[in-house]
Amino acid sequence: MIFKQKQYYMLLAFIALIWASCKVDRVLPVNESVKDISGNWKVLKASRNGTDLTTLVNFNQFRVKFDARGTYTLVNPLPFVVNQDGSYKLDDPNYPFKIAFTPTGGQTVGIVFNYPIVGGARQLNVTFSPGCTQNTYTYTLVRE
Image (cartoon, rainbow, N blue to C red; front, side, top):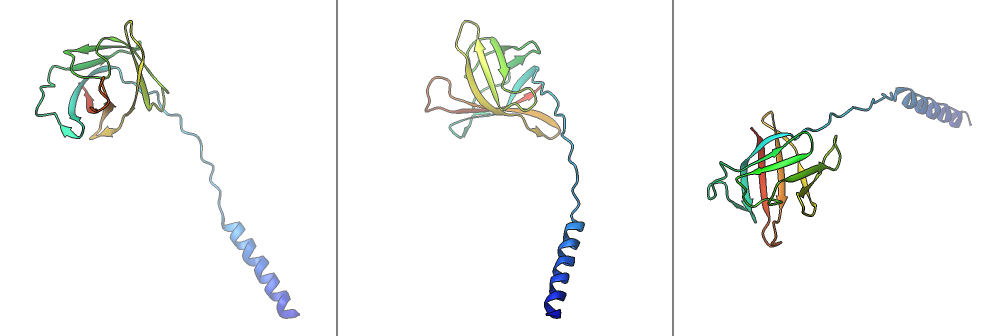
């Protein structure tokens, strides 16, 4: 009986030791900054259906200009999500994953994108199918 009491007290002491050793840190929420895509964006890399187009097509003159008021302008258009200027909207200003393009007088086209930092600079990676769903383009854009 004494042996069982010792085991019981040892178990209680062990549980108390474990409970006392657990330290709970309070994690304060981080206020994420609003993502700003305004500026002139040019193509760094482009592919269609997995085939690299960067060296096959001259993307040097193509630009997408986003302004802070929510409008965009296409300069020297090439295959893109939309084919004329209009307005854009991010799904979430702090954690954007989708962008909706609304050409002037046209219907809204939404796409998923990502916005990583690569080599200290933001990139805008967009994947889209302009018209034919069998052709999927992926552009990696960088801000000028």
